[in-house]
Image (cartoon, rainbow over all chains, first blue to last red; front, side, top):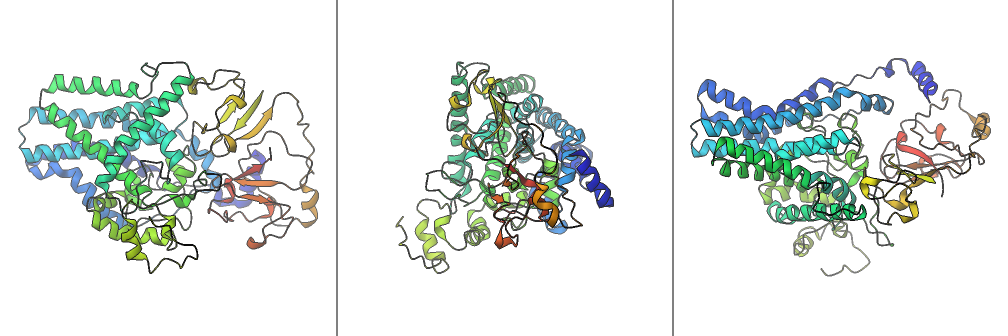
Length: 403
Length: 154
């Protein structure tokens, strides 16, 4: 294998020296969690309360604008460079460094609201800002939780504990990745489903699935589900200790502040799940199983700015094809389902259901080549879509099943 | 005692070691692993997709000398394409015997059979995988040539 590579390299000459242009830009993903603290520093320097909303402005306004400005990046590392990229510890260390940043943002923000005079508006702005950033703790936990090493998985539990969503890496790795783009998956949204009703299905559904998976695993091992081996309880204990400590240090204001930032953190995950597979459906095979997941079962975005603060999460198809592949090696494929903006812009659009539908529904229809039967549709919305898109749908010889 | 490998991520279930974390103590044979078992690392593939990669019983792999797949390739081999084959071939046992081999797209399961070629893609029967251009993509899912692994039927 080695000599083969070397001969290939000798022949290919210059192409061997692959330089990852994004290498040092990934540091943005590390510093992103610190933005609430930067905002607070600016408040202290200038006294302007607008800086409390630094993260909100950056996330919902600046990043979508920069996505539109800088556009998309379709470059892939050549496959020959991937083994070296995967081995390069630098990239992994960046994800480790992100973990303490999330803790710093949490503790720093809590300290600020407990010790500085803030009015209601500033309080909410800071709680939501921290929520966005801690929602991104889920992104860091996601990257780490997919790795095979025990250390990485512990780091994942640590960072997920910040936002009280420790069951995520079980639910996601063993549940969502197995069931994605099927009706069984509470973390795949249906066309016509708005994000608010999706949240009521996704949040409890995810916890239930995680718990059941963990129950099965522990039962097989002959252990009680209520034991310290339960990998849902482990991070939950960290969260309880952490939040109790903050309450003890910073007083009862934490009883209001912590739930808001936590809920908004969870909301970020809900938003991501909402847009990542909206409407997409794997075909059911004659044997009752679903076809293997393929790259066209995920929505993607190659927008450079948002990818750099999200550890390439938006290259979602390759991630689902190879969940254990590290962020620096994720690739774009040709003709993938594509979102018109990065996640931050799409998250914002999702808040207004009719706007989001006007952006996405025709894309889903194109994806299904006009066949509504190949789309996951929200129950009760089928008739609406038949009326709206009926003319586009191909004249199916088989009778359409009346929903 | 055998080993079974996930064709997507390379996770290996070794019957000798079992997988205690998942509740399979050492020595648990593959047949006792439940049918709905999904790969614990990637969950993209489940039990029936796993590939047998090593039977410890018979040390069959007497490393056949180089010229086995080349038997067909040599006369036709194009002068400029010296079979770079950068594929992460996971198999330990060389699939000697037949000159033609099959290749599996680990992303979607598409199989390229060298004996059949792929008329639609412009590869006549007998086209070896190594003769396919490096920038060729899986006709089903668009994955790259490097996403193919050697496929062995069970």
